[in-house]
Length: 359
Image (cartoon, rainbow, N blue to C red; front, side):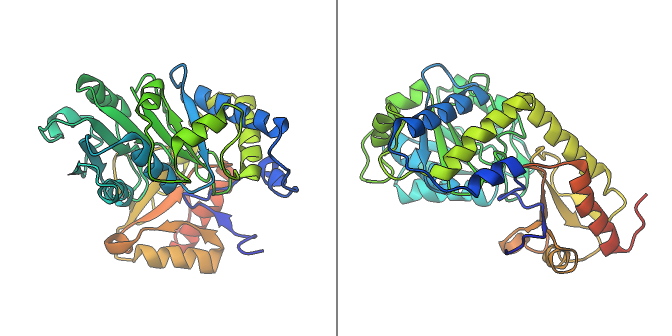
């Protein structure tokens, strides 16, 4: 099997537990029945609890990638009457800008750098907006924004707050109530540590009031919400991934709840960062999440060359960046079924690569 004997530290897909992998190896069952409806209900209940969603919130489950979750949220919840402030701190922020442009949603491309937006009140353009959109963790550069400050800003200015939490769920704190989040977008292949192919859009009661009919068959939230009342979706769901999600949510609860999962991810991130201090690598941003670490070579090496050498020579997979930053940034995930022993595989490979003895 491709890459079967490789150690994976990419920020999606991430390392999955044996328990979840076993579910994926089984025959996919038929789903238009009460048994599968109960799976859907369980997944919705577990997700709403995990993110402390307001009472009356609903989840739209899409058999699609995280980008589909982003685009469908904009399509179904914003209109030409809106004026969106879109945080753009990298590739995924730029994707939200492109989505708004594609669907002709009036918006401002709010380019940011070297800030976690704790001071958004000062930095934001002084215009009148109806909504605020952010990728809470800009995965392209490993940059985490200050959701509490942004949520307070949204509340003060009465902005509809859309948050992509795809690469921070389960590893970093997300609380819809405390952070005044109206819409939360999640995806299966990152912190939830499932295969790619399932996107989830969590809608607060405020968001549900905003849902309108759209010129789309597949991405019409009204259709999903109607079918969701009976635990179904209008089109074929990602059946096996939904079964894995149900098991994963139960697994997280069994292991001490999402708070414990966040503590574990933080411990792994700190362990990795503390153990590579003797290497010619520096952290790319001071605002990194528990989910991953972004590194820049300080010895003139190309980040892309390091990524390729680790894969070819050590069977260790980390992730490069693209475009102008391909030689500048390499990304290391701490999401999924990570342990210190597993993380040591990467740490030891890096020391061997640099021909430095690990202390």
